[in-house]
Length: 274
Image: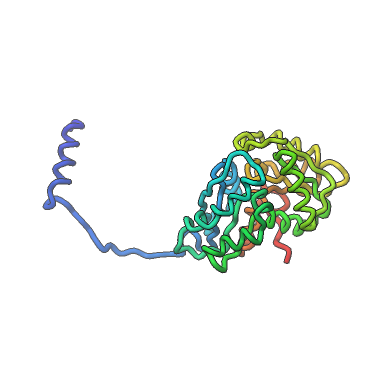
């Protein structure tokens, strides 16, 4: 039988109700769905090219659902443009599945959370998803650093000087001791997303090897750190975390998922400190 005959036969079946076998109301069962253990939501920047890949690598394989929605932002990072993002948070949160019982929702922008304010970010998400646990990279990093017992933090960023100064001042005001910092000094988020993991690892070693610090935090959801965190820790003998790395961990812990996940450094063998 040639292709022309096959196409003709298919057309005949579709066009003739008498030839159609239509089985309706078939029996089925339901279960807890993808999020049988927990479901969490992630608000991702329009320009972010990194966070979903890192979360996929880390994420538990059984029963923990992750749902993401995008929100608009400008590719060039300035304090003024970061502040403008707050108007985009509620519409993005509304795009998360409305029928899902979320255990935690995260706003995935480190500098945005600092400029807008973590409490304001939580209030904006609660305006759409009341009662849900909320986190962001700043809140998550502080929880991670505390839970791992790090006291003096080396800070690595991709940002320009103005953002770096605000970031360090804001983190110090939130109780972090930051005696060492370094930056790639790049304003374009598209370029930041293409900084190689090797370059990031080398920068972590450069600042993290200094005796003034006992751990490293890499700020920015566009930097690819999660897959090299364990390697970097081995090189400097100190804990390493980043915006995405800490955020994934904090979301899981807030959702009641206490799994130890191998291959991603000390943090994923650590429970959330009360």
